[in-house]
Length: 116
Image (cartoon, rainbow, N blue to C red; front, top):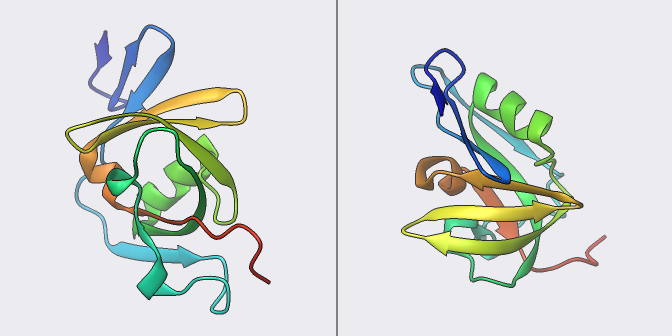
């Protein structure tokens, strides 16, 4: 069932969030040492079963706030549950969250967990 005002679609077992249109782009990084752009990649490019660390968030201020409110905080660990055409279902703790391909492209990840 889709609610056009919230841009959120609910399917059994998880919520699917779409992109917020029309805002200025912004990035949020863990810090300069822990986030090496050459080693990070979009969440949409991950494989099923991988455990990744969020390196940085790209997008408008509203998009970044939405990511953070869903638990996508730089430095946290996520596990890839499913990938279909760039859309991704991830596990963060006990939660399962579905992201469209556009949103999954804005979450930059790395598989390095123990960097300081």
